[in-house]
Image (cartoon, rainbow, N blue to C red):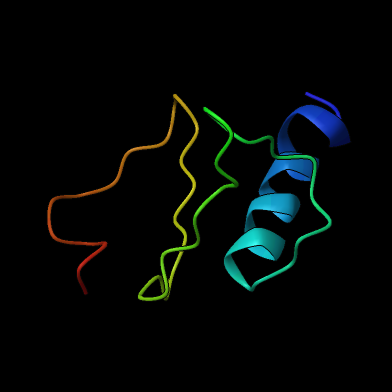
Length: 58
């Protein structure tokens, strides 16, 4: 996948979570995307990635 479909969207998601309003995420039902203030980490897995049970919590 190219920058826009994978890396670009992940970059924008991180910007959104950090409070940026200049992303391409669109409003749903007239409401802007909500930022969850308690997010500390974003874990991204591909379809072929295996994450052992409990590894993310550690």
